[in-house]
Length: 247
Length: 205
Image 1 (cartoon, one colour):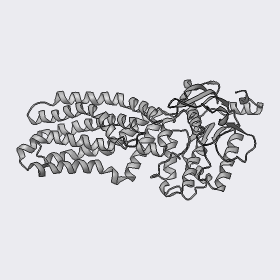
Image 2 (cartoon, helix red, strand yellow; image 1 turned 90 degrees about the horizontal axis):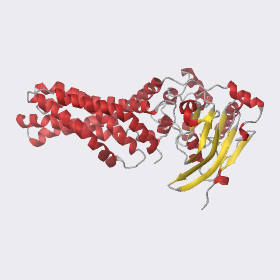
Image 3 (cartoon, rainbow over the protein chains, first blue to last red; image 1 turned 120 degrees about the horizontal axis):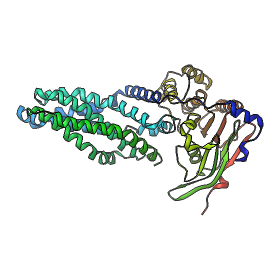
Image 4 (spheres, rainbow over the protein chains, first blue to last red; image 1 turned 60 degrees about the vertical axis):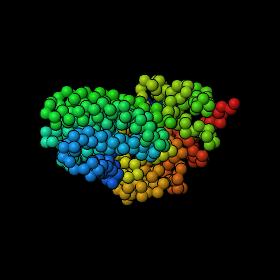
């Protein structure tokens, strides 16, 4: 350590070279959000996978169980929610995988920006390219499954919050399994228990409206779960990434 | 930058211990050691990507844990993998990185020219060679206004011109009052490079 201070000239240089000013934290959020959306756009084929899965499987149900309207409308809320869950879960796996492989994850971790905010940007981008399309496609599937008219508003509102919650919880699992080569199954086991309340409240809300009741209570609970996830997930994910990256 | 009595264990097997050293403005410190001696591990500890089992890090005379953000804003770390997105162009890669570190937009074009990527700014990095991808990563050194550079094997996959370029960058950085810690198997053609040999700190049971 004594070697550190050598000539007066170099000491002077230390004083001249001031540390750079820190950027406002929002900059990193915007940068990562834009980057991930651009990347998603470059990989359009992969991007469409969860949505295609969601639409295909849901379209197969009337073919498999028969086109009776009464039966389908009974199944519709639950089926659409289950497919939305599986569609998001499938894509959660890759949330940090490529970043880990090419070393950009390490750059995010050692960047001066708060990691939880960068993580939140990645989760937001993930939701925009998976959850949002699923939410927007849901009414069409409702139509295929003969969902009664009253249920559409609740379905879309519920799915918007529900898929965002799926993305938020999925990120924790993805972060924990990032250094594992076959983390897919483990990821499902980790996040499934967190997904259940969302699934229960989400499909219950649609069912209630269809049965002529009010969806207020389940939607409020769904909102509460979403708020909880939004508060917890970025920090939990950031902490998991710091631990997980060193395998 | 100083580090004192650093030790690291992986799965209870000690890799090195009692490791100390420092760099001041204008210093270039080369970490030497054979394969598996812990060069990358040490550099990752210094860049805070990995926590040391024991020991402490000091930055500008104060404990690093108290001023993490300030330290990281003043550091560029180029690791084994280039840390760039292959689907994006060099310009796009630098501009997302630029959102994390303080730089100016026009610096990006200049930096890419300086590392010899003129005319390649807007093709996807996937189509570039390994050496060119490495150069994109090195362009980060040019755009960031960081005092400390930590480079892990910067010469990998780089041609002779590239090595000369890196040496020029390092020299200019040291002259401007910056500090560099790097690991490399090749001897550097720069005066006043200090060498820290990890073999001296290795743990043998």
